[in-house]
Length: 93
Image (cartoon, rainbow, N blue to C red; front, top):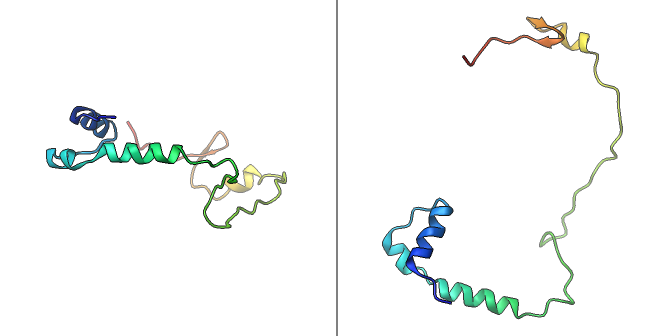
């Protein structure tokens, strides 16, 4: 598949890459596409999918519902409050 200079510049613009004309000319996109095509020829039916290259896994805690803090206790140290919320100075006009 032939990749034109205009296509490379378009994709670079979409990716917000600023490539010089020399960099665009030095890219060998045909070789990249040929390599990707070779990868698609591989038989990967017997290979189990992986999420990570090493044996790392997340340890999740049990999702347990617990009572929340009392609103009045939270607000008793607030310097200013209004309608059950902490009142802060206006920062945007």
